[in-house]
Image 1 (cartoon, rainbow, N blue to C red):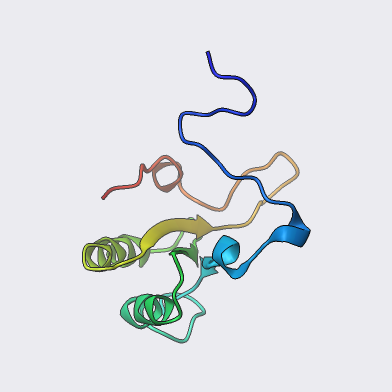
Image 2 (image 1 turned 45 degrees about the horizontal axis):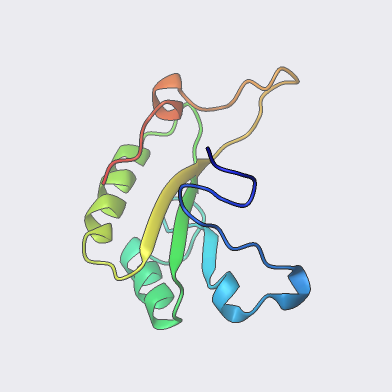
Amino acid sequence: MLNRRQTQQQVEFVRFRDLSPAHVNRDLQVHAVATDGQATIGELIARAEQEGLAEIAFTEHVQRTSTYYQGFADEVRAARRNATIKIYMGVETKALDEEGTLDITEERLGERPKS
């Protein structure tokens, strides 16, 4: 049984005052030209590698009516194969009501990440 300080994958907790650039060398809110970004997926990955980031996450805006996402996701998956950094993919959507209904299809919401 694991205690509070142990996990299956050891995690380092660092106080804010002790953070270094190595602790924060990631950008987990990246938008490409598919929505409101100004660079392509390849350009963003190349820049992240150039800047020495360890990982990035593409979090494009998605609505129930979005039709671009599957092609975008396929492009990210293809680019991920040649990248030297960890690349995540997610979505950014809005809550439609106080009950928490999201402006995303159930199919998209239930998608599992693919390699």
